[in-house]
Length: 117
Image (cartoon, rainbow, N blue to C red; front, side, top):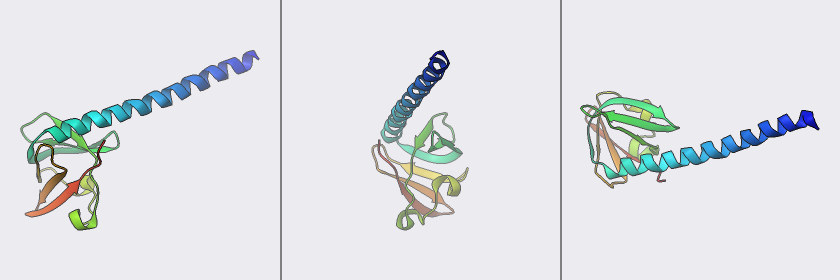
């Protein structure tokens, strides 16, 4: 019985960690969504990266990073995945509480809606 006690404790700790990390990511997703939705975002992309399974941009002249989950759509954005398509130097426009971010690349506009949390 003693040799199973250690395995049971490890298993319980592992399950607890999985549940806790899932709840933490869900809360972070909601916080990121609230921040993203509440801001006017207008400017040139300084940095783009993937954070917590989502896309993140920083606008030139700002230290604020905006994390969101854009939806790829053939009609709205040519089926271009945001992090693969957007580059440093491209422009973005999103009004506060708007459900659409506009990416301006080489003078052409691409529209991205995003997942809501």
